[in-house]
Length: 168
Image (cartoon, rainbow, N blue to C red; front, side, top):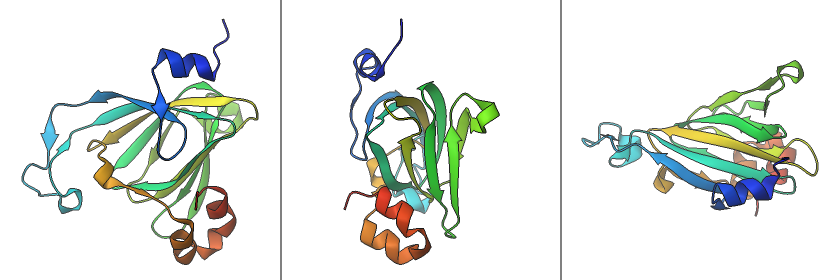
């Protein structure tokens, strides 16, 4: 049986994500970190780790966003995913997340904290299903969705890619 995007959306009970695509949290560690506010950037306690399933369809993209924590992408199914990263120094990198090492695809990818990143499906008429793990765990208070105007002021050298992967 060939599994398509709708199969995974239904099977994994995925819902629309604010940055684009579909997701469902499938793990939230019960252990808590930062109860003492030692890591001031988090403004309170966080779960030690969280994980989600994430799926993008070919005509969607994950808009530029930033997390205060590192995030690890894990490839599961579909076509490869083009991940666009702009680090805090303004360096741009395109990494293909997929299962074909002969095409320079990687099965896992670490997005460093405080890096802006966006993603799109590599192949037309396809989808990409990945997993995302965040530690300390994901909290929407640590999530910033990029605004085109703001990102262009910070990174004018990346105008084309910013315009392609922002909503406003």
